[in-house]
Image 1 (cartoon, rainbow, N blue to C red):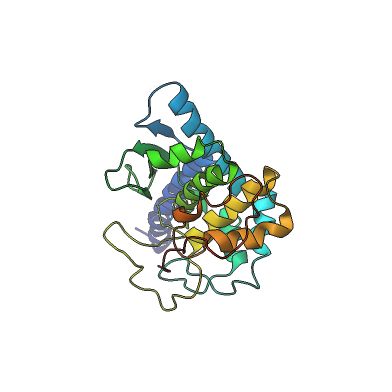
Image 2 (cartoon, rainbow, N blue to C red):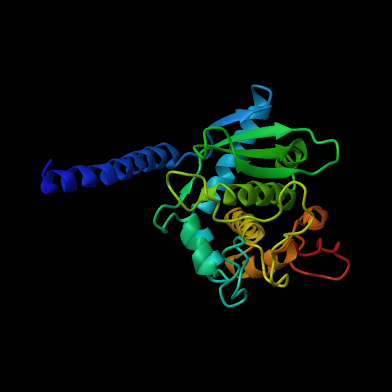
Length: 267
């Protein structure tokens, strides 16, 4: 075998795996594009499924909206360093916005099955890798979140948007051919993020959820664009805020005030 033939064969040995990865990446991206979820599970057909589907569509649509992008990027000066994941604890608001907008090379929303459960210990939301070796993800929501969404109070409904958007943030992958989360926080057996260097910074998934919640309220006409930063502060950027969901009935301003239930400690 000539040296030229050996080099040619060696080049193909390297090229074929790269072509296969590119093929998988293109297929993943094409299937995921524009789909708020892959399937709904654990729901009764009919009204319950319609409500859950609508919640996920609204949350996903809010994340992909120009208003969300504008509101998140506008918080850059207020939150100059953000915990995104263990390897990126000083992300910026622009970084987060780029990933959500899929403007970073390789970024994608991993197609998700949305699973509704009734959790014996109360409020629950989780997201992570589903079946298929990184091909799919799972979003698990407690029925409490669906009841929030079915409320007549628009601020309480917005809290369901917060949770759904937060979990969607965990389905954003850094790579198109494997599930490598752009944003992480606690695992199922953790009460705090174990590797945090600075607990005073926002946590990306919670910031994204709060901005989505307040952007949705803006789109409903409940708050103006100028009121989004105060709204985000109300619902917190480093932990959950379910205790405050019932604190703004009617036209009560969505801003900090004495007597509000305290936010959970920063994760």
